[in-house]
Image (cartoon, rainbow, N blue to C red; front, side):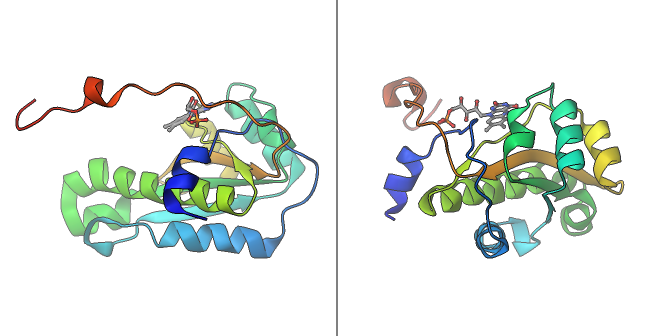
Length: 173
Ligand SMILES: Cc1cc2nc3c(=O)[nH]c(=O)nc-3n(C[C@H](O)[C@H](O)[C@H](O)COP(=O)(O)O)c2cc1C
């Protein structure tokens, strides 16, 4: 699929078919994620692949009760490894680069999933400490996004975007 087509055609999907998603496909998504750019090529990301219904249910609860999370056959929790980034770049690595790098990886997952006919949604609204406890995530590693993955059972229309001339500045702000 053409990159621009993927960028523009991808939508957040919040209704999924019950059809399973194979391990091979999840591997492809993680493979796409690990090819994201990262500061100093540190690759400060970790991925937790969840299929267990009880763990998915608890994650949905931690995410303000967004039940569509548990309805997806697979959930990928993407984490930013602050330890790895701070070893290379100190406080800037810990507070900025590792989040930027991980966001790029999350976007790759979304675009790759869309190109494979899957639906995803970037969930940022969740209790970080709750997610940490549910998934046994060590300190120094931050869960950044919960990404439910499944075959889409809806085709939402594109939400509007700010116009280019509202967001671009030339030469100075
Ligand atoms: C950082 C971030 C956090 C988000 N958190 C949530 C969320 O908690 N729940 C949700 O349903 N969607 C969430 N979204 C999805 C946005 O609502 C969605 O991307 C936006 O409305 C644009 O729609 P589109 O993805 O279909 O283009 C989040 C997206 C981003 C990038």
